[in-house]
Amino acid sequence: MEVKLYNSLSNQVEVFKPIKENEVTCYVCGPTVYSFVHIGNMRPVVTFDLLRRLFIKLGYKVTFISNFTDIDDKIISQAKLEKIDEKTLAEKYINAFEKDRENIHSLKPDYQPRVTETMNDIIAFIAKLIEKGYAYQVDGDVYFRVSKIADYGCLSKMKKEDLLVGARIDENSSKESPLDFALWKKTDEGIKFKSPWSYGRPGWHSECVVMINKIVPGGRIDIHGGGFDLKFPHHENEIAQEEAMYNHKIATYWMHNGFINIDNVKMSKSLGNVKRAVDLLDEYGGNTVRFVLINSYYRTPVNFSDELLLSAKNELDKINQVYSRLSIKIQLSNESIFSYQGELEIEGFVKALCDDLNTPNALTEMYRVIKLANVSLRSNPQDIDKLKVCYFTLKEMFDYLGLVFDEIILTDEDKKLFDDYNKAKSIKDFAKSDEIRAKLIKRKLL
Image (cartoon, rainbow, N blue to C red; front, side, top):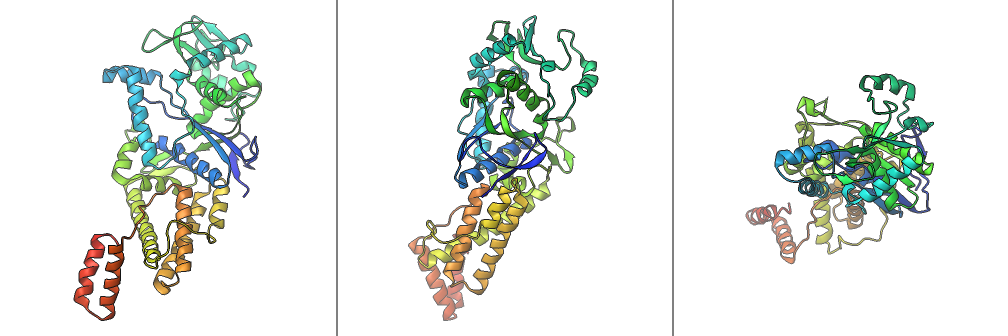
């Protein structure tokens, strides 16, 4: 099925055409690991996990990369506060992030490069940029010459002249131009690395470029993703470096997800309304948080509130109830819930996801199948073939979406209880049927 994606580079929806047939390479900017991540950090995790799952289901071989920025000014400051070294601090919060990623049901990336493990490559990359005339060093710092890139601003659609007007306020006299950005920063504080220019650490904008080039030969990938806040300057500066070094823009498709609002207000530290992912996941569970994120089209803002989370949790409970009832009915007819060779009611659902991850329309298709399942369970519960279509269709949809429900596996004892329950009802032995019903409810089978 044809996949269409909104490309931030062209500002339009385009038909996806991979560099290599039936293969997809995707890089998504990962977190700077100086603290527990907030819920905004999980939106690209879920968005691009959804895209990855779609491509896998469509038969593509997917190479998925997401990095960790494990050296940064914020890491150095936080390490001082926690009275531990930067490496220990970074490892602590990488582990915390990985737990959040697992709890929100996102697949582990194929590659998870770290800045500290890519240092030699970063230094060699910067040295090459200096050699080619795209970078220069001043007193141990190295800067990139933005003026050398003719189409700088191609992603953000910002013009150099307009950027210069705003940049003059913060003009740094050591730079040739206020637009030039740091590739290497000399430092005497915190963890530092030896380079030809000074002991220091890399600028943020070089890290992803080098990691991509190290993992993917030639540095050309199909999709580069991240939050909308990374579009400028981070992604813009990535493109500038890649154009300088290899004369291409890294990715064919640039994708950006929208922001997170809290109670209709943009989430920010200054407002004190930042929600940690771990807290929401612990309180509401991975299914609920993920469900809220995928209910909105990925390019639009998501508004988190306790009311919305509780509503989502209740909705998922209803979905799970239908899914469980289907499973029980199928198993009581001695049919398998693990294998199915029939047709699925899934074409409209997949078509919606292929249309630039249109999850609202995909969920509409899911609810259509749930309604069909409810009707079948009420009016014709003996039509096991129809129940199986509904059950296995929902199972496949959940797999696409990354929603995880516990599978109910009936034991022989469970099946006997159901048999006794139905017999008691048929002979109107209400005392017996009520007794058995209580047992079935206790086992969460009714």
